[in-house]
Length: 286
Image (cartoon, rainbow, N blue to C red; front, side, top):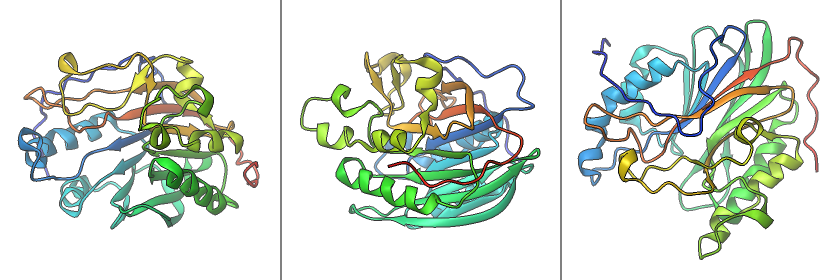
């Protein structure tokens, strides 16, 4: 499918910016693209789809984790011919650039919740380097923590480094510093990130930006009308084991030509420097 190049506005909040030299860096992305809800008014999929496709091509990540990708959206986005694996009914989509070889893939159903949750695992090879990329969509609350436990158990034996990207529906702060103190605390402060850190994972955003505020929600409001929280409010994360070193991380704010956000989430991109030889896989920490 040939599409016209639409003018996109891409803003990065508290971003280090894309690195100038990317030849030896693996770029990964997570992006919840929002399902095609008929009640979305001016934000319906038919108004977003062309700009969404153009953004994904322009961003050009080697590996991408997309969430809420319904069948009609998959059919449109898959027209560019890039390798992908889709996990219905959870609607998690793994995409990769053509220079990424897939050695092994698996879909993992994650327990809990009234909406199906899943993760897609891909053991990959890229420019002589190996690793495992995980595209995930999890619940908040206690169910999300249980889903992380299931995911860690399934990762044993897969080649490292492990890079996990997705919509976790929870904040990354340690439980004792989680900023939400109202009725949403049990959802957003579920210790899922604590569990990943205990297993040796590093939050790429925090590694590059420290405790700088970050937000991945848009509410479909344009940037000038949006509430920007004064704290780290990311629910879309990229985490990796220490063999993958984050060099740059940015949260994009792509807009349609009508100045509407592409989704109610914002995409996160991270650039990693991977080791040459593949380390031996190890069990996650306790």
